[in-house]
Image 1 (cartoon, chains in turn green, blue, red, yellow):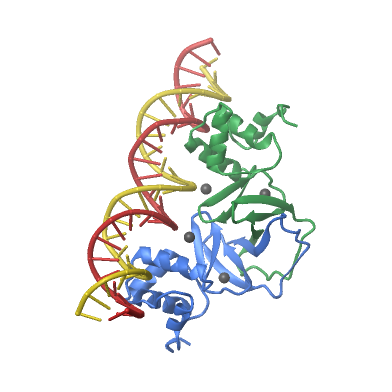
Image 2 (cartoon, rainbow over the protein chains, first blue to last red):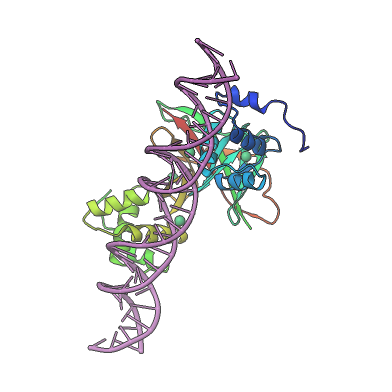
Length: 136
Length: 136
DNA sequence: CAAGCAGTTTAGAACAATTCTAAAACTGCA
DNA sequence: TGCAGTTTTAGAATTGTTCTAAACTGCTTG
Ligand SMILES: [Mn+2]
Ligand SMILES: [Mn+2]
Ligand SMILES: [Zn+2]
Ligand SMILES: [Zn+2]
């Protein structure tokens, strides 16, 4: 579980073309050295501060965007002005609890989507997002 | 097609608990007296101005939110800071062309989604959104 | 083990989308 | 026609995010 320092987060950053700076490593630990989860820039910023690794909000945004561009994170947009970053980059879908903003994963391998029309011509498929919206 | 004044937009507004003011009727015409489409607050604001029915931006936002709350419109969030209002409130899904921000409908009746897990307990299903993201 | 330089961080300004405020303009009804 | 409540509006405020420009740091090279 927690506590085990990942063997080489730094290497992972380097191979994404990112220098393993103090700030990036701290954020990477908060993101990748635990189970998959969903963060917002604000929540990650607060978490870093709480862990006594203060990082400026601008750096949190920069880092989330860089990690996302490097394929280390995926971005999920569920509501206007509510963008989550997801440490689970594999195929899966989401429950979104509208009443309290919670986001939960569910595996996509049990889900079959059939009969999707072909993409408009001149376009290629990028991703299929399924968001199951529920309320309490 | 266009040109035929809808018999009773005003009644439709009244039965949604909204007074048929000049502004609301103008926006309702732009929204409902043509084929289904997707607008942003800005695009609708511009359209109203072009049709010589200027409405303040605050009223456009108020009205879109009221129409949405009344079930006359549905809101579709495709990207951070990119919220569309959809005049098609029936079941259907969307193609989103990421490279240029276009949103297209596709019918949901040919699409089967099977194996969705049950909603987390204590919650009831609100809607299932499928967004097929494509790029040029 | 210095430079030195590109890459990185930061505070704060700037921006874009949206909501709020409070005052003026309407509407429906008494 | 007078009022009370509703709606609209300009502009201020808020929120989430990106930009700017200056300070700082990690890495390579001499
Ligand atoms: Mn972004
Ligand atoms: Mn809204
Ligand atoms: Zn997820
Ligand atoms: Zn649609």
